[in-house]
Image (tube, rainbow, N blue to C red; front, side, top):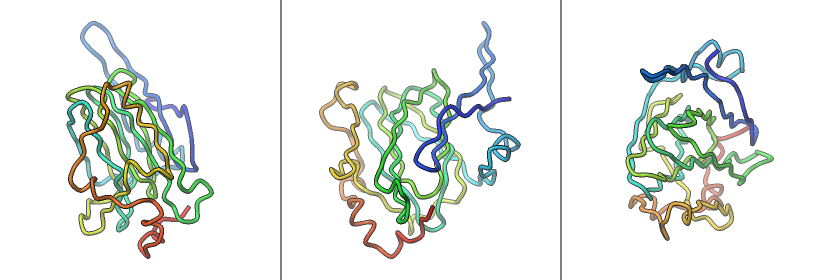
Length: 193
């Protein structure tokens, strides 16, 4: 068996531990198996793979896509990232709550994020590479983001542990809306529990 659930949170987030077989030559692991996902009642219809590389202190997020809503299976293949997920499902009992996970090439954990979460991460070392399988094809016309600094959500990004005062972010992320602003849109109704 390649994957074992180690944590389930916010009515949908699932953190997996992977079985790693290593010796002096290196290692082997299964980062995804459809039959195991089926056993846990999780989707197996991944149709796009994404791969990003970030310098230390780069923060990407908090991103999501409302049409077609996108689930993500996330892992870090190089470096270390603080991965954060915010529940943005309009009718969710955990709406506005977040969870964060320190995922790295060392711990080889894998995170399942269903549609209805805003996703972001902070690269904690140079050359951090994040890879994720997606349940929908990227649709830039229906991609949105909420600000990583939303005071109502209150994410603690632990910048001091990385040795930075502020993260490096994209122009798009500089103009992101708050969670409350997103919830006022008709598109927010696409996400339900």
